[in-house]
Image (cartoon, rainbow, N blue to C red):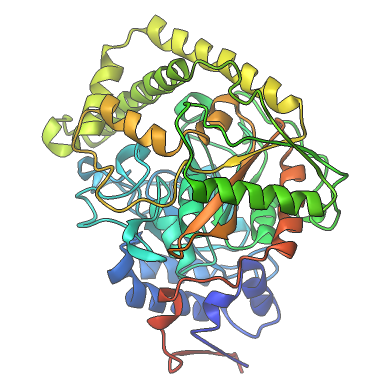
Length: 494
């Protein structure tokens, strides 16, 4: 057979791996297709950075054809997941020459799953923005649905690359919404997993004081579930572990959940109004869930009796402490003193706030986070799942959230854009963003479901049902096809 370039972005990772297993295509041919799309689309999107074809070809040559994602091209976020020899800068000019000497445990698991890593995707400096527009990448990362709009963040390039069909899925991380925000902006599916579900080793035991975790942004639910099967579980010496899943995540997709009690809210936890496009998306999701036999009721107490200003301050302190540690740790490793000229203002001022904190200041913030997390978890426990908007408004235009101001002012602005996503980071619960709606401008509008601690299965089962009744995978930005002709082909092996 021959797989033309327009067909490549139409297939998810599971389907592409099946072509490799059946020997219809080779990993090298899939890598060539992905590389072709980088060359065609990345000049417009600025989503892929530090691509290395030689490393990719070496990885493709070692693929186990029986692996879950045998030969599937894959990109790591430029903000974690160490990979031997592949540049890792955390979106910062201060680390532009850093190349890890070894794979992290998560990267090892990606490789065992057959994924072919050939580059990284753009991310704002040290992951502290909801968009990627910093100076390191010589321009912003653009949304494939509208080049004037942001792709979201901080897993910005990951979402843009998947939406444009450069790769069927990509690695990202989420410490306050950094998977769910870009997935919502780019019309994709993602799952922020339970705290400690995925490994952080060998260098770390947790990320952002337990608020952050990694996973993938995908077009299909099955790719998300299969990737989680391939990567979940503690690594040696992990300081704490997530509850064991009750079944394989991929196998769970073959079972419909029992009728779920789903609470929904149209009230933002910060008290600000929600854009009508986002209200409409939640109501659409609620109606779809009811049609599937689930019990959907308003969650009148989702304000949690929560002091949102306290939550914002607590997260801000923890992020600043972690940013100071990361900035200074990188400077020590590279033996180049950190200076304001190397950083964007929001990053540098965040690090300064973190450096000024005492050990007791940090621990007080950590304890506050845990108390707030318990309150959030108790609210969700009243239901099986909680339904909210992913964002308080549609994707934003580029330029709005540039990091040329102090971190406190910057974070106050970005938190108003994404007030719902941090709830699950504080509580450690799993949460997914599902692309069920598009507004009149043709921009995607995601909805968020938060699950009980350790229960990704219910979320994935519901997502599979929603994918069936409100399918989204056929909706692709025109850019994903407009730039690709039919002359470039992957040819089958003889």
